Image 1 (cartoon, rainbow, N blue to C red):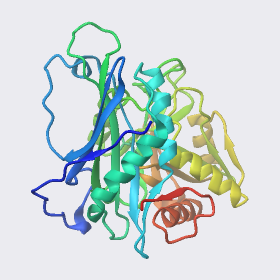
Image 2: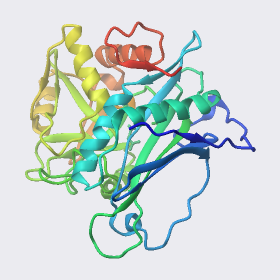
Image 3: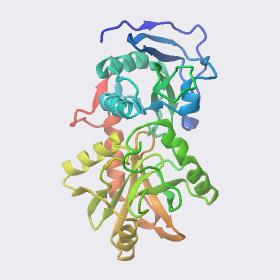
Image 4: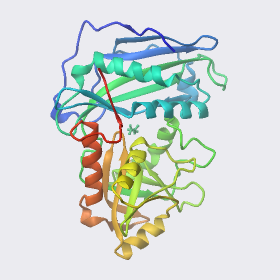
Length: 356
Ligand code: COI
């Protein structure tokens, strides 16, 4: 695909927020990327325009049936003045896996990576430099047919918006507490659990809100059939270090194939740590804790980066992990991944892509 990306710059740039109190996803840069899809014509009219609201027909299919998907990725300023993206190709490839499941047309991976690089360049001065900050990039696609029949749309919009962010959880790198959800389920095999589609997140809100009322930051989902095996946390994949071995649930169709998850596995293996992808039950985790063998628990995600878990509550049995402190393994993975992402460490894996 070789389309020209038209650029219309804003005439009213916004004031930049304070880098030390960004929070997550509250501020948006001056521009956004938009591209349309029309059946018979394909993706067309890629453009960068000033950030602003959309006008939608009230019958727009997405608003009714949720045929919509999204991605999350980040861009960093390095100390030596470069701008880096972390594994952007992987996010665009994952869009196509999600699109396939959601009957949304495939995108051209290389073209979309180029489009994102162009957008990042246009809003380069929005990339924060304070420790722990980055520019979060949110590509998304949604159905735009204005028809009430339930069927795949014939038209779509692909958009990218960007937000300077700090830590996803207010706790930052400090361990979070997690409620193990035994009532609601997130996904089942054959469903949409592996896809990054908006409905998965909408369906998670009830449990998330109930857990928040009990004072928990996130929920840990169990499998949708037996409510026995661990799947993932609301906004991240999850890892358990038991007796020196790192275990993470295997991808069997109901779990999001996280890019930070894959990077963590590759990194730990390269450092000689034994990493196993397999089914792991919540009982096994609690048994390991009782036997004094549960060394660490941590989550991985683009937004969450590496997030240690300090407490798990399963049916009111509470366990404290590593005295509620960040563990050695989580800290090392955090330091290495954020070091590579921000250009502080050599990228021996070839994960980063420079925006020039
Ligand atoms: C991300 O980590 O980028 C995600 O998309 C998770 C999100 C729901 C904040």
